[in-house]
Image (cartoon, rainbow, N blue to C red; front, top):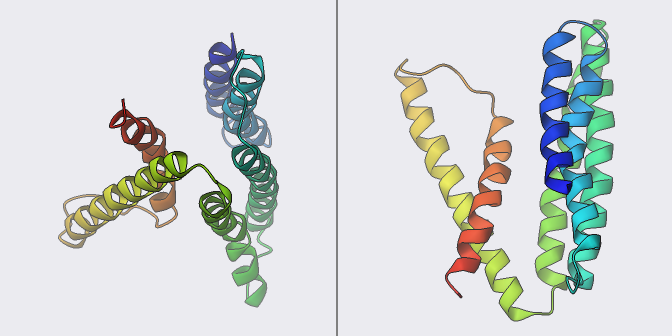
Length: 181
């Protein structure tokens, strides 16, 4: 049920974005696509018998959820100001940097998780997943950067690098835990 909620929200969000491209309704699709997996995961964690969440992980989840809401709101506001042509001059730098602040906070929140987690096993698995994801992301950025320099691939904006890190973290977490089975 919860997997359907998360996956269905992503699909429905993408459909809304596709169908309303260029209108003011794309934000609704982006919100649905962004937050439905998070909500589904939180529901699932409460419904699984015997799956009590550790305090550090609960705080991490709460902090992450809150900062992602802030990020979404700041990003939508910055994009609205940009689309209305209100980002000229010095104000443009502040508006352009505003969405980066919550994303930088996500990395601080991740560091706090490592600091607050008292279970050495979980801390080691989390640290391993972070290292693998970071290493993969740096390798991809290096290879893509050289291909781009030589005109072999299109330009990719730098904000895509943390997106790649987080996408790979979803893969490296289970792989890091797997070595202990």
